[in-house]
Image 1 (cartoon, one colour):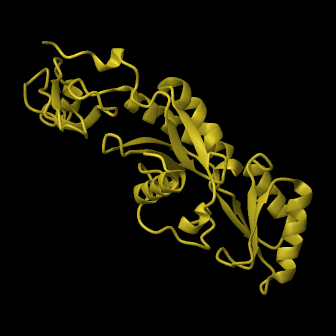
Image 2 (cartoon, rainbow, N blue to C red):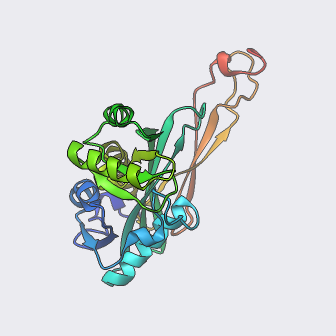
Length: 287
């Protein structure tokens, strides 16, 4: 007897609420991507200050890795709401993984599913706006703000140095920025003011676009269901090299086999490429 195709059945999240613990408006990004595709309702959960888990402005360091922080937020939201499904996103900023020269944003959106005992993660990464300026000159500060995409991208100001705790966040108008700059300069013991991007989701349009792409990646994974047990998240788990060269037949570093897997039942499916590798990628033909 053949198994029913899970893709033809109603999605297991249809009609269910998914808890989203956020205080920075992420429901406006995630719900339009996930709700219509899965038939669910992303439900914003309040009652907890997520800044306690870490801030981009460094007054509270993030404990653990990016995925650990996202998982913890999802679990907290589930606990507060009393729901078996939880959603959270977590961002990280640094330099690009290629040359280490371009400001870079990596976003994770994690879905914790106690119904199936699984966790599914969407990810996106792109160049971003992520800059700092230390100056006592308002004209320098103004030019920095213009280059930073202000006022659409909000700014943070503090006196003296990048770790001064006397911080003003969410600056989104020129008048507010100039007042905060002058006040911080008066407080500063070295006459300098530190300006930087406010990296919270509601304050950073470029980041919001990357969060949406991570949500779309999560959506696609959740729509892919295991052929055996029907659980969401049946996805590519491994890429194995060794694709033979079209010219000499030697194994290359190109992907020969992709492995798909289910986190719930453990099903694995290997798909082998039926095309040879370009000799330009062969270490023997093109050393």
